[in-house]
Length: 303
Image (cartoon, rainbow, N blue to C red; front, side, top):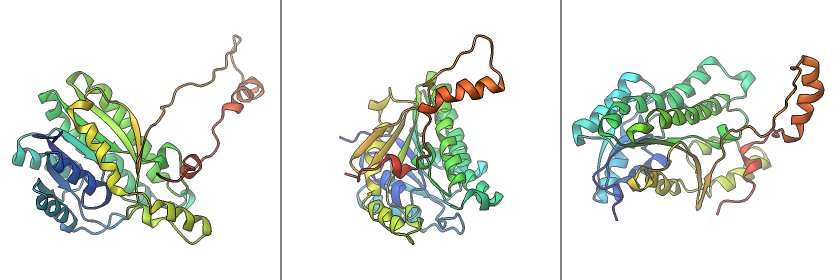
């Protein structure tokens, strides 16, 4: 069954890795695909039309329909061009996968403003730009699906990624806002935290025994494994799924929790600084979350 037959899907960052796998699977499921990729280096520098064109060629070789786009998601005007290309070529848009990204990993106390802004601009602002550009068309046709790529780096944590973590948690909030604001128009929005060995993961240092061991596990994470669940969320059969946070790691699919109160402290006389220290914080302390990193939570090997 071609579960995306007749649909038009935009996939950003689709020149390689996770995005390429999603674009190709969407085409296999019958969708016409806008393959967006700026063709930049991992830090966002440079540009090339090659990666997007290669994905298009791979889709066409399998009998699918796709068009390359090299506009930047980081700029409002160019994000509008991505959307307009889909409308000009195919007449409609049914789904958006916000996958484009970059990395500038560095410890917080050494991170520059440029390092922070560059990552926020692509991941968070880029997701906003493309999502906002599509929103009027989704609203007008009374349907549409967004899938945004978040990360366990944001959901849980990793060292040296203040910019990336802030962006990825911001995407969670953006997705939830979209799901609430556009619910009455039958538009849905969800997040996926993908576990995959891509060139971004390949930048993790391996100069320690721990880093080397972690990288050996990472290399077993297949980028193409993210595509089936992503495309499932784009189908009409997932019309009741919105505002959720998922994870995909090889053959595992996770549903993540979302922040909710877990303990409460009440003082009928009101709180003072001293009583907060004497009573409230000690009450909460047994339920505090440790300073986990992603690998501390996902302790078992991928299956």
